[in-house]
Amino acid sequence: MPFTLRIATRDFHPSHHVSFSTAHSPPNNKAFESKTEIFNPKNPAESISIPIWPAHCVQGTPGAELIPELDQSRLDEIIDKGRDKQVEMFSAFADAFGNKASTAASFDLSGFLREKGIGQVFVVGLAGDYCVRCTALDACKEGFEVFVIDEAVKSIDSGADGWESVKAELQAMGVQVISINGPEPKLREEVKEDVKNETNKDGSGKGQMTAWKGMKISKEYEKKGGDYENEAGSKNEPSKGAPEPKSTEEKKEESKTDATEKKEDKKEEKEKPKANSAKKATGKKAETKAKAPKKEKKTPTEGTRKSTRISGKRSAPEDDKKTEGKAPAKKAKTAKK
Image 1: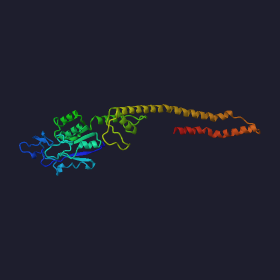
Image 2 (image 1 turned 90 degrees about the vertical axis):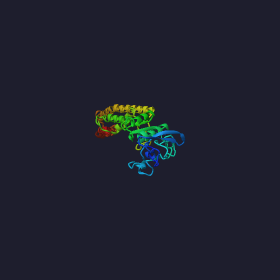
Image 3 (image 1 turned 135 degrees about the vertical axis):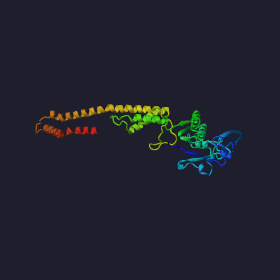
Image 4 (image 1 turned 30 degrees about the vertical axis):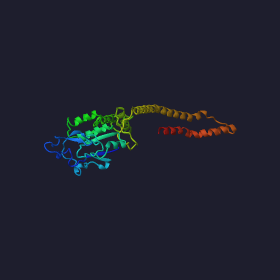
């Protein structure tokens, strides 16, 4: 799917970040078990409790770099987050207190996306139950249409109390958790199989793909409710951005066009036998014309002006007898082609 922007985020923590177990004393420094209280730098009266983690993604270390398998040449931006040692930042949009473009993040993501005219946000990565969750929820709060791709997410806790619970929360807030095995791809595969098993007019082609079947798959898919059919900007290059569902009016107009095309096809089928009849009739007339001169032939009286005129008139038909019958046959052959 072509995206207008591809943005990567990375935790970029100071070595003594408040969430690290190394920043706390025993017994309250057990990673994944202990919690600590942090305060809002813009409102000290506000505080929240956050989990303690092992030291990770420390600035200036390989752990803070994006994985080498990720082709960075395809990225438009890289956001560094969690830079403030006193503040936790799971979301790519804001810190744990909702502060945007604070010391914790490199820039205001929501403002950047609006500036670029983005309306839909697809979220992938890790951890699903923390950074992915908070980024998706904040994107939804900012008014974007948000999708999380299930297969492209990894969580700290993948069980019922972890990622499964988070997915339910996301969906309740309006985030769409989608899958490569979801209803859209399944529907398209079902339509594809149905159309693929249709035959050509001569009864051949069952189970084989052809150009007309390829076109019909898209139309049938739309009719059955497939909303994410990408609109092509040209025949070879699809438009950028997430595909948009077609409106009810557009689908009705397509249905009318399909109906008109079917009527025209039926009309052409009906006219074909008439054309063959016309060819046969033309052949009969040609034979009649060829035989007609024999019936009308008269013996002229030689030596008179009248007979000379008659002879002149008859000379052409005499020559035409050899070719007149052949001409219609040539036309009929051409018509068959």
